[in-house]
Amino acid sequence: MRVLGIESSCDETAAAVVDDGRRLLSNVVVSQIDIHAEYGGVVPEISARSHIEAINPVIHQALAEAACTWNDIDAIAVTYAPGLIGSLMVGTLAARTLAALKNKPLYPVHHVEGHVYANFITEQADHLSLALPSKQPEFPMLALIVSGSHSQLVLFKDHGDYELLGQTLDDAVGEAYDKVAKILGYPYPGGPAIDNAALQGDPRRYELPKAKLSSPYNFSFSGVKTAVLRAAQHEVGKDFTFPSHRLSELLNDTQRVDFAASFQYIANKTLVDATEHAFNEFTPQSVVIAGGVAASRSLRQSLSARLPLPIEYAPMQLCTDNAAMIAALGYYYAQKKQPTSPFDLEVVPSLSMTKTAWI
Image 1 (tube, rainbow, N blue to C red):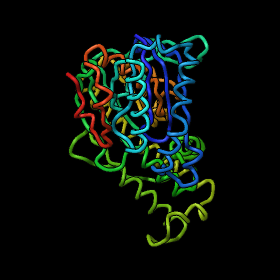
Image 2: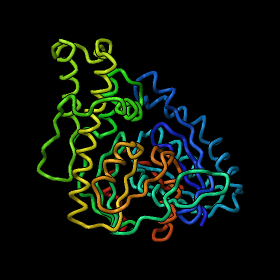
Image 3: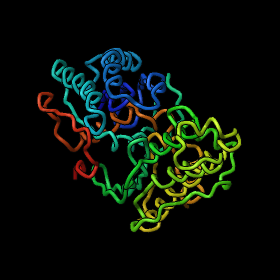
Image 4: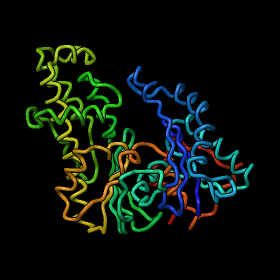
């Protein structure tokens, strides 16, 4: 079954074609990072307008690179939740229109659940060269989902049959990365910038707190973010009234990389401690990480070092927002769910994964 996936939940316009939930034929992504970097974060109105300009060319390119016509496409999968409402509306309108015009079944997909299914893509067309896992994950599967908007630990018993074990109680880890990067004077997005800077820093120089919570599976990152701010103010001899956006002017290069490394050490420890605890309690057959922060080299290394089973990671290109993961999940939706009428589909900007389990 050949599925066209469409993704536009935030600041990437993407389309991809995937066979049988595992074989990638094309993966086209137009990023808006350069546009939003000027503002230090995503501006929703700008994002929606950019999607409008890119959506049709991206879909056409995905079909062309997959060497497909519409006769070859069996279904369309599209992100309908969660995300920025204007961005979601652009992608779903395109998908609804095409589903109606081309008479294709339409499957609305939850974006966060979709991130997990990047790990199910194990084959690719000859013209692609991604470093894919050698085999699909096995159930029960433990998934650590970490991005700019989401930090969740989920136990999957099967496709569509999952339980949310824990989640962030405040900032998502990716959001904390962005805010710490801004304090230290690194560019947006903060994840790659912190990851690179931390390679040169001392992760033990600054003692930062790890949140103590009643549940071993929940996360909190607002405290460590504030701790970085206060420690940086103290380091340069300023009090809490000193503006955070001016701190980077006073920090030297060594201090900046040491703060980056110290923050990343605690962020990783928070995530890996919870994942290891869940692994020991539920003894899953496989463990995956998903979402933009899953591209972090240090997180991958930390998780592999702590767990007793080998972990195969999705390629970096499929960790950040893309449509390949949407198309892959769409295939599994099609095996167990009825398609949605293109005339009935509505976006749900704040829908939790807890509302979307289908078994």
